[in-house]
Amino acid sequence: MKNFFEKISIALKDTVLRKRIAFTVIALVLFRMLATIPIPGVDVASLTKLLSSSQFFGFLNIFSGGGISNLSIVMLGVGPFITASIIIQLLTMIFPKWKALLQDEGEAGRNKLSNYSRLLGAPLAILQSVGFILLLQSQGVLPQLTSFNLVINVIVVSAGSILLMWIGELISEFGIGNGVSLIIFAGIVSRLPNDFMQFIAGYDAANMPMYIAAVVVALVVIAGVVFITEAERSVPVTYAKQVRGNKVYGGASTYLPLRLNQAGVIPIIFALSILLFPQIISNSLAHASNAIIASYATAFTIFFNNPIVYGASYFVLVVLFTYFYTAVTFDPKQISENLQRSGAFIPGVRPGDHTRDYLGNIVTRITLFGALFLGVIAVLPLAMQAFTSNKSLAIGGTALLIVVSVVLDLLKKIDAQVSMREY
Image 1 (cartoon, rainbow, N blue to C red):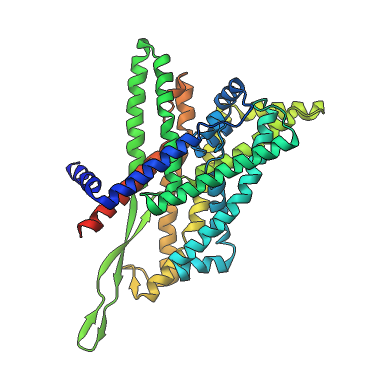
Image 2 (image 1 turned 90 degrees about the vertical axis):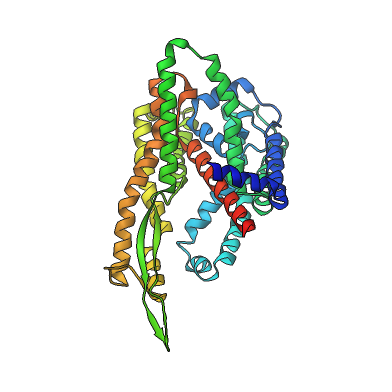
């Protein structure tokens, strides 16, 4: 702890680091100012009711940085950019040329793929803004807009999302930390005062044991998130000795770190997308003119909104998508080939296919723990709400994972900057 405060003190005394921190703070304050400017014609009562009753809009509110809570001009947040990044990342596994960019060009290849994500993010922002505004109109949150007003609102909302993407890029370049992650983090943290006031409003001294239990659960969950996020399986690697003239090269031993949770928060995003898509369709069909279609859609909505059905489906999908995303992003064959080319090997394991199978088996086993952990964290808010009527005590979920991951990443970047200046 003492070392941590010493590094913070060094960071604040360093002129360059102080400017980076100040730039980051100013950019986040600008984002929060933009998030308070609503688009015209919002029915606040209908919006509040919709946010409290819909898992879909609650999820979007997280990734918009809280912009949906008052339908601000940045209501989409960095969602289109995140969606574009996920699509580009998945397409790299389909197109060999894009995959070669990452393998052969390294940082330059990643920059090219980032440019593709930015280009794809703009049309996605337009499509999402059109669909979102039309959906809000059907829910009565927005009035029926004329074609001209609809086009104006789409332009404003799309431009707001692109502006946030640009602010995030500026933070990454001139500030400290990942700009997109910090924007989402700032939106989540900005909800804490409101949640605290709701807790105070519903405070009851008779429920003190429940409050204490909630605090204990919160501490355990945060400790678990930190542990799983940082946990890794170290695979020993040895470099073969090479004799050149009178000198011996190699022979060093190191290790290959395999993270327990390699997928991060992506599986939760995928699972929610799959779960929420049929809900959007059923909600739309519930207002259909055909009575049979409307009745079936209403019945499906009631069935799927059952906490047990929704929670079980959510948990299973998170586990499955964790394995899927890990398989997409981690290639044991490529790693085994890289080790073999560099003259390295895992002690007791033959190079080539045996190394590939060995690494694949390890990743499969450790991913099970990471997948189960993500599933538990995802459904934990639903479990907490089942035991208490106070929603402010619902601990866990995507928001907690994002907050902890962003804080850990930010501390590492500050520590790296301080260490670089010390040397």
